Image (tube, rainbow, N blue to C red):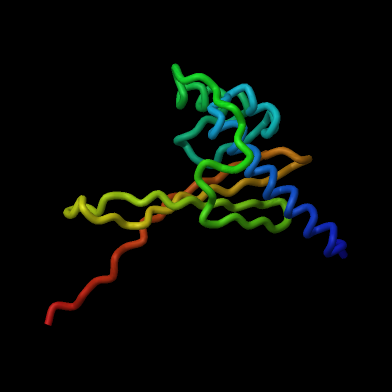
Length: 141
C-alpha cells in the first residue's frame, strides 16, 4: 500500500511540474525550455499537436514565431480554473470567455482542459479537450 504522505507529496510535485512547464515554456515563450519538462518520447493524444519532444518544441517555436522569449514570472499569467493531480495524472483547466454566437456583446465561459501523465519527473503524455457550457434552454409557452 502506498504511503499517503508520499502520495500527497508526489501529487504536489506533479502539479508544480505542470505549473512550471506553462510558466517556463508558454508564458516565457521559450521552446528551448521544453526539454526541461517533457520526455523525449512525449506522446500527444490529439491529431492537432505533434508528438515527441522535438514536435512540441517545433509547435512552441511556431506559436511564438518572431517573438523573443520573456523572463520567467513567479506565477502563471492566467491562473488555472482547476488544477488537480492524482497518481501520475495532472489535469489543468483554464477559462477563456468567448463571444456568444448571435450576441457578441455577451460571452460564455469557454474551458480548455489539458491532462498530463508524469513519468520520472517529466511530462510523458498529453490529452486536451475543449468544452462549451451551453446556456440553459428556455421553454416557449
